[in-house]
Image 1 (cartoon, rainbow, N blue to C red):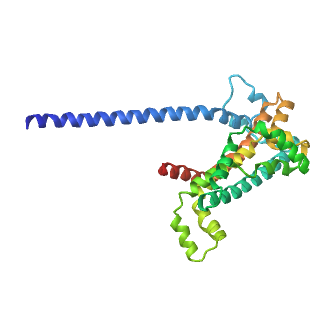
Image 2 (cartoon, one colour):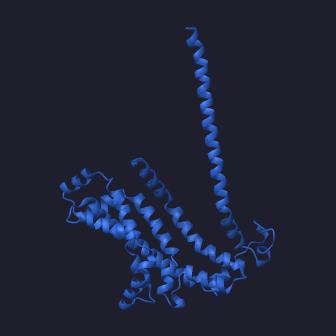
Image 3 (cartoon, rainbow, N blue to C red):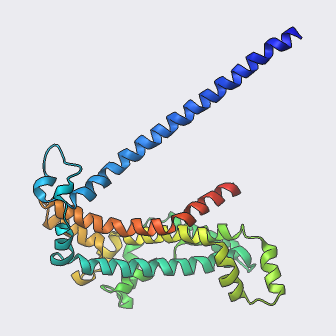
Length: 293
């Protein structure tokens, strides 16, 4: 009895020390994450602040992080109007949204077919699609350009859009998510007389909102920031997208840092808006993937 009575305080103190150690570990982890987040956000904060300040304030050393009394939209007005970013912005919006919609449509349809239908060669075709992910774009860009030239799509919007309407990553992602949808749910719909298009559009797609949101973010970000292929296939300044325009603008206005920051902010803000609109479904998709293991 005496030994048992002596063991109880020892066990309680051990539990307290363990909890204290866990709290310290969690606290240190949070501090590291917060420090990393602040370090990652510093360039972004300075870019947004510099885009609102005149050049005389931007080039000061040490740099000025905040100057609310100097803030104005003159830089954005000049870049948007005089430099012509309005046209480049509309080009990027059209190309990015078209590619995003096309990838969502093709990836969801192909993912549904590979996940829920049995047909000859399904596994082989799926493996061939996945194998294309290992091919660098630099290997196929010359044959792709020749194909676009023969189709008459060079220096057109379709030359930028058509090569990107199907993505192996999107097909793989949608297939893996759709495999987690209970098969009896679809079978019950078929027994009730639902057609395959109805099952796909009214049952499967609503259940795949997290995956669709995540794929939409990836597709939009990839097409919005794409620089190499539009640079190859586009010759006319009227068809430039923002990455091309920003590259040429930086070369031309190398000393106009405040205008460069305004142009970079114009490129960044739409991506931020898209993520904020879809972050709930995006985070839900990550959580569901974690629960599935």
